[in-house]
Length: 71
Image 1 (cartoon, rainbow, N blue to C red):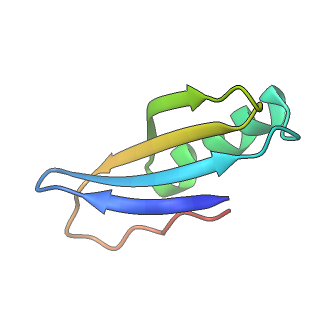
Image 2: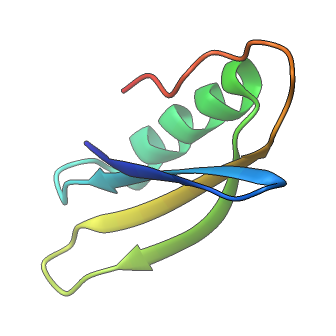
């Protein structure tokens, strides 16, 4: 499900690709857990014609150790 990560000076980005079999409710649960425990917030969502979703998450860069994305 992971789709790579990107970074800039202020933000850290992580991409996820959710297969079409993942329901909207399950996707919301996964993203909520990432927000609560990893400090991630939703940046963008792209929905493709085959039903897959590409989600881009972001979080502010921090000097303290934060958990990575868990999928």
